[in-house]
Amino acid sequence: MSNFSNFMLNFHILTLFPDIFSGFLTESILYRAKEQGLISVHLYSLRDWGIGPHKQVDDSPYGGGTGMVLMAPVVVRAIREITKEWDRAKSRIVLLTPQGKVFNEPKAKDLTKYENVLFICGRYEGFDERIRDFVDEELSIGDFILNGGEVAAMAVVEAVFRLIPGVLTKEEATEIESFTDGLLEYPQYTRPEEFMEKKVPGVLLSGHHANIEKWREEKSLEKTKEKRPDLLESGDNLKGPMNHLKHGGATHHSTHGKEGEC
Ligand SMILES: C[S@@+](CC[C@H](N)C(=O)[O-])C[C@H]1O[C@@H](n2cnc3c(N)ncnc32)[C@H](O)[C@@H]1O
Image (tube, rainbow, N blue to C red; front, side, top):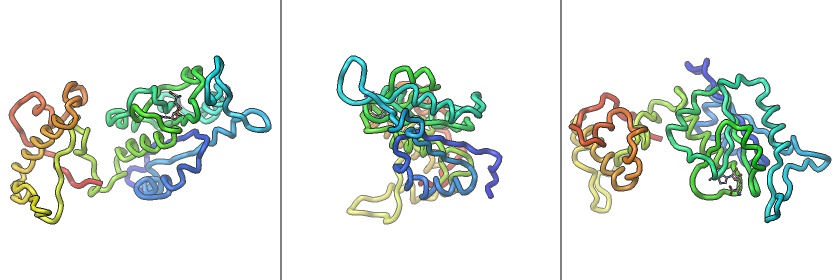
């Protein structure tokens, strides 16, 4: 049993295709976290709230157009039943939609605060607009269109649950990953020391921890400038030891080292 057993984050996923999640829920770190009692994941088939003998969940759009739209009474009834015994102050209802705010690491961290989080996966042409009034927020996983919200739900659940204390082992620890400090992670190397005439930077072989840390901070900033300059434009999510670098300050040596990465 885990040392963190008094905290459990319960994920709830409302979907037309619960079977999509089977491998995701029974493998690797997520499975271990469930076994340790740190998280739970509950699947709900939207079809169970469908209307009439055919359990209808969608209908054609008013005004014409192709595709089908998920019906408000179906989705709202499902939301109400699933959440009826929840403490609403400790829960979050999230609509997965390409029209939502783009999901990121600070949002992942934010979602770890809740006891229950419900993700609503759309399909077809998406949701009747009135459904939006019954959710707390809308999240997108990027500016592209998926066939359904299931892959988005998996991405968000994975980004959130790995931040819960006790989920990752020391070797898998998350203390400095890309985005943790609002910067991309520094370059990583493992054996061999030389590969196709490309050598591991000497400082990493030096055993000089302060120099290694300084090098990593510098490379982290360099990499971010090169690949994701947008992250530097706003310092809002730039916290911790890397913040001074963005502003051109002198390098200092942070006290937390990276234990490993998964
Ligand atoms: C084909 S999409 C519908 C898109 C909708 N017609 C629109 O333009 O907003 C079907 C469902 O997939 C999910 N989906 C698609 N792209 C997504 C994204 N980038 N992020 C999160 N969910 C997405 C949503 O749940 C959406 O309702």
